[in-house]
Length: 83
Length: 83
DNA sequence: TTACTTTATGCGGTTTAGCGCATAATGATG
DNA sequence: CATCATTATGCGCTAAACCGCATAAAGTAA
Picture 1 (cartoon, each protein chain N blue to C red):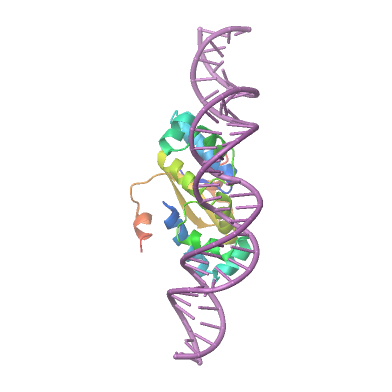
Picture 2: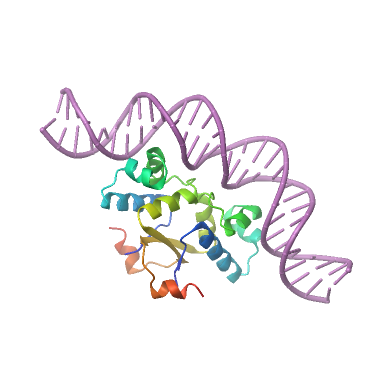
């Protein structure tokens, strides 16, 4: 159920995935998060400079949450997440 | 083992906790992450504008990683994390 | 207390996110 | 093909992160 976001790129892909699962366009999600469509486009493509507040705005709009933990080698979850 | 970071504040506290567990000063960790001590101070205090790249720099310097998942009600993990 | 380390705060200057708007790809559908 | 929705890119602008340095504040130990 949880997916690693080890880079801005991966985080962007995850957000995009969850957005599409909800059938939202970038414009719609941006509206919910108080951002703009252009921003979401950059965020999903892995813009490293995106501000933490923007990340959280999108996460809460998608009902997602973030956890922090010690880096793992490569769990089964990890491998499964590649597909 | 994993801890929720539902806000910039919580994320800052978590980073601070892991930094101290490693016996690092803000200056030392900042050096490892390619940032400055002043930045870490603000990051740990929950500055919402901190950039994603800075977050990742600190996480990797502390050998931490981030995961994203659907928001949970309040799991046992969640409660345990409060202490 | 003093002396030292660590953390927080401030200022000027540079860089860049984000806004707002426009528009150019890209994609899907008929 | 044409049409429409969606996503990506660009420009000018403002606000703020971040730098670099300094220093104040807070903590620790003698």
